[in-house]
Image (tube, rainbow, N blue to C red; front, side, top):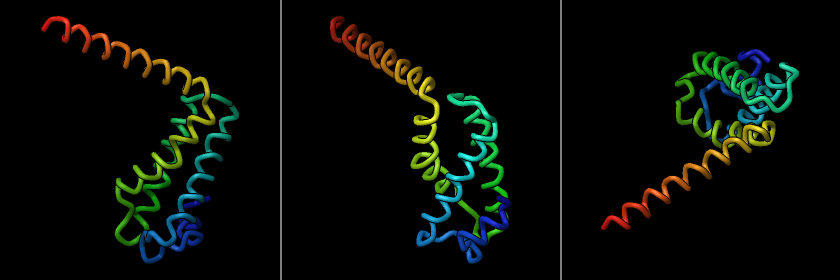
Length: 120
């Protein structure tokens, strides 16, 4: 869908409004999913990140065409609320790798903290 069509569907003619954010975020989520599916590869965090990059370009195009634009905070909210959970769902291998990395990091920090306690 082109930015102009998204602006019309989400009724962004007067700028971004919290009243219509649900419609806008749903459209953008659908766009992200369509961009990811267009690669034809399942469980690929690299392709998901490429789809996010494509969506961000579209997002910036929309931002330039509406009054007051879209702030980085709105992008951050969209990414945290919609894109990140979608990545976890669509890329289970990435999620497993990421969870393992977090577990190892936490373990290193715990050992470091214990070590510093033992020195005292």
